Length: 414
Length: 89
Image 1 (tube, rainbow over the protein chains, first blue to last red):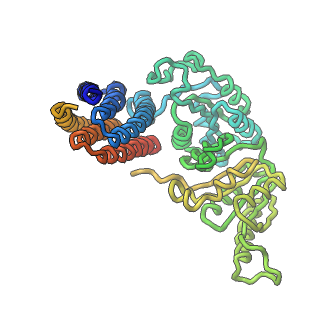
Image 2 (cartoon, rainbow over the protein chains, first blue to last red; image 1 turned 135 degrees about the horizontal axis):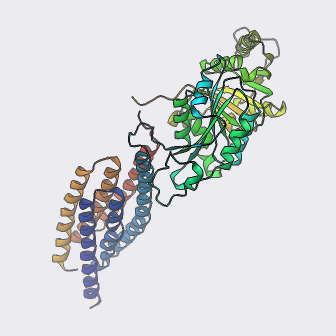
């Protein structure tokens, strides 16, 4: 009697599940739009499959029912996750594609009224031979305020052009329809996205001989800043730093780290408000040579005191230095870099440190109250960094002062 | 459960599998393909489940569980990949 009843219920559930799956697939084949497809796919991946699995009660087999319930519980969790992830990806991709029909520059821009017009900034930056082009990332956080204050305190050479870029994710913008783009013809305040902080930062940095413009650009911060730095031909990208959460630090992720990975130019992660004492770390690699070159050449380091360090893993032996020992090699490296800097008229001191590079550099910077650490990075990303680690990444995480990372530009997909 | 209903459901789910394959073939871009694969895997789980009802054995459903696990992993990996990838220009 009971078995017959369960069998009947099972049959009804099975047929209902099949019917829902059929309706869902019909809808999927009918609707080309991804969001409508996600809606109807929910019918298949949610109720459809769960009803079919629940029909197992009709089989009156404990094995089958147990397995089916486990699968049903699993599917209920994963279906919602996968739908959410696909929808999120779709919102990002299609909102970017829609805001710029040509697809070349996948972001929308809106200019903030600033002391100088964008054209003037371009013209100015072409002026002097020592002039620099700088992009300042500003996301409205305390870290970004720090970056803006640092940019304001630096004595930029005449003719320098500075772009302050506020990257805003699609979901941050107050527009009701996430897919409608920022209208670049309107001032930002008219789009319900007033940015007094951005304007204040621009006015703060502005002074005679320096062009400042500010813009709101929609998109992911790392993407937007990399794009802006590329199109502006920037020499330097300045960004704030954010405290990392527990999980983020476990997986080695940081917003600043992602910007460093993507940027086409050196990136300064701002944590101090001036650049009076600079610590240049060197390890004899091509990237640290490039970093030394920057410190020697860039006018913003004209008045800084430079402390050159290199980290040698081993402690110095008691009886002098053997010519072939790593410590001797470290001394040769550091002497070459110091000579290069002194030729450029820099005020240089030098030191060989011993210990684990990342934490040792950060400790030394703390002890000497250094404003800025300059470090070259091999620009390792993804698996390579996960396996081998990155000294620059360790320094960035451990240091409490600003860090300037000089990395080779990321490889572009051809 | 009536034998006829179970067999009919199994046959019908197999037809749905063909429809999901069609959906995958017609997908215009990567994101549509990811969704189509997700749906295809779900339908395949339905087929395996009904197959286990037909034969009255449990291990087909265990295979379905493994498939569900792979399906969610594939979806997450693929979406992460197209999110992280730099826009070619």
